[in-house]
Every structure is written in C-alpha cells, then in structure tokens.
Length: 440
Image 1 (tube, rainbow, N blue to C red):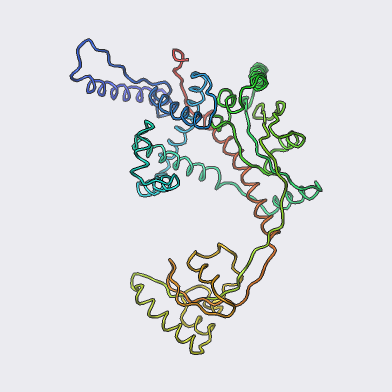
Image 2: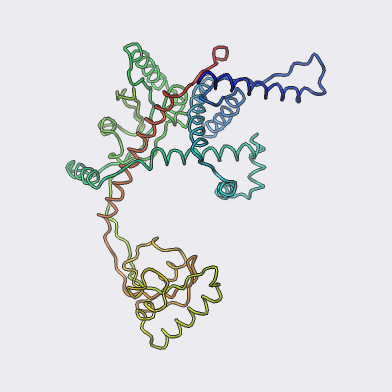
C-alpha cells in the first residue's frame, strides 16, 4: 500500500511539474533550458520539494542573521531544515486527516495582530514582507500551518497530560526538602540524539559528534551556531534557547549540572535516554517571593442582551433598577428578583474577586467604587450591570500561586518531553524516503 501511494504521489507531482513547465516555457526559444523543481523527500502521502527546502532555508538564514548568529555551512543547515519540514509535514497530514482546519477569519485576525505588534498597518506590513522577499500569500500559508501544528500538538499531546494534586504535593515537598530557594535558569541546549535501541556503533557516532560540538565551542564558535549546525533538538535553528526555567521544570540530571555552573559556562556532555546533551547557562536568578494581591468583595445585578432584548431595552430596565436602589431598594432583593446572572440566588454576591477575574469594563467600574457605593449602569459583553462593593482586603495568595506555578511547571516539563517523544514516534512509523545523494 505504501508503494502504491509512493508511485501515485510521484506520478501526480511529475504531471504537475510537466504542466507547469509547459506553461512557463511558452514563448521561450526551443533550445532554452527550463529548470524544473524536484522531489527531495517523500513523507507518507506528501512530498517535499527542493524549492520548499530552499524557501524555508532562506527564511531561517534571514532569522539567524537578524539574531547575529554566524551561519553554519549550507549543507548542514539544509539538513536541519529538512528534518523540520518532515516533522511539520507529518503533523499537517495528521491535521488534514482528522479535520483540523484554520479558517480565513481567524487567520486574518492573527496576521492583523502580528502587524499591530510590529506597530504597522496590514498594508505596511505586507510591503515590508515583500521587501524581504516574502509574498503575503506565502506568509499567510506559513502562519496557517503554524496555527494548525499548534492545534495538533494541543490535541495529541497537551490535552492528554494529567497533572494530579499528588504530583503537585510531591513537587512542593521536594522543593521544601531542599531547604533552599529554587533558582531559575536561562539556558540553551544542544542535543545529539541517539536511537531508542542504539547500537554500540550508534553511540560511538553520537559521542564523536558531541566531542565535535564541544571542540567548536572551545574554539570560540558561538553556541547558537553550533546548535544550528549539529543539534537534533527542535529549536536547534533558534540557537537552542530554552528561555527561563525553574529548576523543578528541568530533569534532575540537568539541574545537578547547572547548580555549580557560572553564567555563560558550558556543561560537560550529559547522557540521557534521548542522547547526549550540552547546556549553556545564560543567566540565573533567585527563587520565589510572597504574593499579596488586592481582592474585592462585590455583588452585581445583570440584565443580559439577546436577540429579543436590545441594548436599549436592557439599558432601560437597568436604569429602572438603579433608580429603585437610589430610593432605598435592597440590593440583594432586587438581584434575586431581576438579575439574570447565576449569582442571583445569592443576592448577586460574587464573593472575593481577584484582579483579572472579570472583564475590563466591569473591573474598572468596580475598582472606581468606594465601600458600599453603587455604580452607574455599566455595559460589558454580557449586558448591563449595576455593581456594589461590599469590602476590600489584601490577601496573601502565595500558597495558591505556588500551587498554580507548580502545576504550570510540571505541565511544561511533561508537555515538552511528551511532544518530543510523540514526534520521534511519528517519524519512526512514517514512510520517509530521502533523495539527497546528489545534493549533499
């Protein structure tokens, strides 16, 4: 069956190339040579072409140059890029097979947000892309693929992770038993991967490659360049940077290596089931501090908007309620009678509200009130509100924040490990044929 798909893919792609070549050669002299694209890899039911590899490599080069990273040799860089294209292709095929799509509306909003982050309008941003040799159409497709891959990862990996309360307890107990503040580390990483059932020959090759990486670093080659040249990690082309990680987010063997290291120091090779690792400590900082936040005890009455209740009608109703409150009506009784929120049965009581718990219009109006004061009608995406502040306090949320942070750190660590394992398993199961002999 795989052979059938392979032949079908090649025949379809070749027919397409011939048709395109025929179109592009129209009007040319009979003896003029027209260079055709070619397949350089078959990945299950898809192909990767030389043009795709060239385009992606050009983009990566531009990114590395902007970061001031010295570029590795072209052949080395192209191999790294090709592996990334293979992983992307497998994930995009899975998305297509399982119905994951990114519609044009969401894509447009994402690109508008990217342009806004660069303090540009869409036309100006498009012109900048064109100046850099990136057509807007190509940029849109790349962003669509990035969103699609993120959704595949979320569904296939992240949503399947379970963080139990017991794991959090164990994590916090381990931290407490250390009797020291938990440092945070900003690190970069080079991975020389070994197969799961590595033979002695595989291990020897990996050791030689690891020693080659260390020699380059000792000779003054930048860590990011060595990463781009030799690392098998997914972020190799980004210099191997892993950002800030709490010690608890790191494997124990990484943490033990990092503890005695100084800023900008490079570790000795670290052996793990995945291969050999080299770490660079970019920076480090101290542990956690207490978190005290202002909380507001509030209640409200909500009149919702709907297809049958216009904003004007809802405003008229909330104005009537506000007038009754101004004339001595009891807030909790009017909330039970008129409010369309789930808090109505409790007299509109929302309990203690943390910053960010409510939508911005509601939070701003609530924060502007004095104790016992009732707001003027406030419009939010949910409808019209009147709000009353009952009391305020400063609350130490360190324990809650510590547990939340622990959950996030455990999830981040498990997610990255699970994602890399999943990618490797997909790659091992897939039919991948490389046609690079004459290129590399």
